[in-house]
Length: 469
Image (cartoon, rainbow, N blue to C red; front, side, top):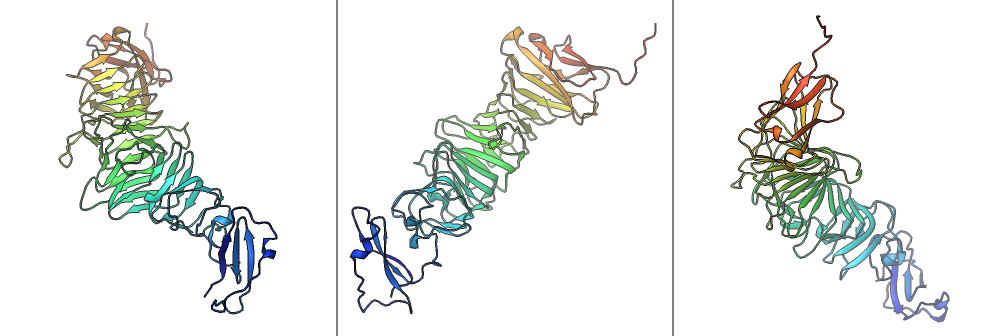
C-alpha cells in the first residue's frame, strides 16, 4: 500500500528535461494499493523521476534526505519535497554518514533528532532541543543555537562534537550536568566557543568531577549572568597547548569550586571582556575559588573580584598556582581574602586593587611591572590597606618601576579621613617610583612613600579650612 507522497522510481545520469514525463506511460500493477480516491502522476525533478501519490500539500516536513546539495532551503533535500516551516521539528537520523548542512533558512525550529552520524551545520541554526547533541558539529564562523537548557542526566556525553574556528555552540539557558558532561570527544580538535547563560554541576552522587570544562582539546567558554553553580565542582583538564578560556558575556559569579589542574602546566584564563560586545567590560565575582597548582590568568578590561581564600577541597590541594593580571584588567580582593598561596604578577596597565576599606594580606609574593597600578577603594573613612609584610615584593625595573596609585570610593560620597592615610605595609615602595593616577577624587591631596617605605595618601581636610596668621 502506498501512502500519499513522492516515490523515486528512476534516476538518470543527467538532468531530466521538463517534458520527460511525456516519454513515460504509467501502468501500476494491480497489486499496488492506493489511498481511496488518490490520484497518481509522474513528476520529474533534476535527474530523478518520481511517482506522486495523492495530495502532498499537507505531508509532514522536516525529514532530511539530502543528496542534492547542502542547503536546507532546497526542497529536494527534504522528504516529500517540503521545506520545513518555522517551529517544526527536524530529523537528521537518516544520515548514514557524516554530512554538512547549510542552515540558510531564517527561522527557529523545534526539536532536532540526531542519528549515529555527525552533522556539521554551517550558517546559523536555532532549535529548541537536540536528541543527541554529541552528533552536532558547528562549522567555522557558524552558530548553532539551542533555545533552552542543555541537560545531561546519565552517561558520558559531549556538549558538542566539534566547534570550528570562529564558530559557537550557543545555549540560551543553562548547561546542567547530573551525569558526566565533557566538552568534545578526545580525538576531536575544536577551536570555537561554547556559550551558555550559566554552567551548573548538579551531581549529587558519583564522580564530583563529572562536569569537565576540557578534555584533550582547547576549550573556550562564554558564560553569562548565571555564572558557575551547583553542588559539585568543575574540572579543567587540558593536555593541549593552551589554557581553558572562560570569557564573560555579563557580570557573573563563581559559586562553586573550579579545578585548574591540567596535564601539561596549562591553566585557566578569565577574560573579562565581552564576546558579543567586545567593548563591554564585566565583573567576575568569585565566592569560591580554584584548587590545584596551575596558573590563573586574568585579562581584558574588566574585574575579577576575589571573595575567597584558597582551601583544600575533596582531597585536592589548595590553589597555589601563579596569578597573572594582564591587559587593563583589575584583580580586586576583599579584605581578609586572597586568590592564591602562590605568586601574583601585575603587568603594565593592569591593576591590583584592595576592593573595600580594610586589610588584604596576600598569600604569596608580588611582582609589579613598570606601569602596574595599585588601586585602593574607600568604602568607609578607614583605609583600604595592602599588607605585604614578610612577602617578597619585586619591582620589575627596580627604582625605575613606576607604580601608579589609583584611589576610588564606593559610593562616590565616601572619602578618606583627613590627613595621612597609610595604604600599604611591608612593601618597601622606596625601591620604586610612585605616582598618582588621573581621575582621583577631589579630596585626594597627594600620594607618596613614607620613611618606612609604605605608600601614604594625604587627604584634604573636611569642609572649610581657616588659616590663622
